[in-house]
Image 1 (cartoon, rainbow, N blue to C red):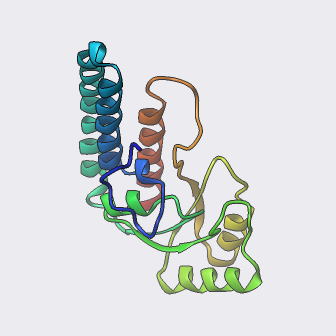
Image 2 (cartoon, rainbow, N blue to C red):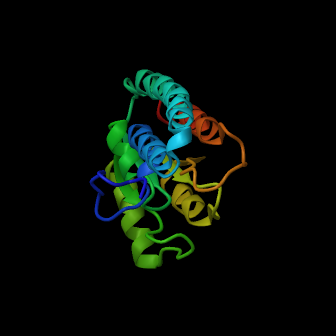
Length: 178
């Protein structure tokens, strides 16, 4: 269990969306592999340290670039971002779909639209894995803009895919919230 020792937020499993928590997971994975394969323990630890250095650099960059945002209120597509929001001091004012693929009904849409207006939320975040239709409806009613925030649940099978996705998230947040 790569998330052992991490306190979940309301049972939410998306801990890796926080770079700091992803770093804890990298350590847990390296320790677990080292325990199962002691002859190669040093290799696992060295590889983990190299990747942790990359993650730490990205985390520092994101904190620097996101610390002076004009607004911190966002609306996310589904409940994948509480750890991310916590790490970067963002406020999730509303969530469009509690479960991906279950578009909000009229009552839910009205509630979200009211929240967006009440908090003057300018940025709605869809996810590349799902349709942005509900977010686009909310944007049309409120004047907010739809952007994309990727929870890194899919992506290319590349060694640095997570880093690239988080870099894109940083760029998108800067575009949306500055």
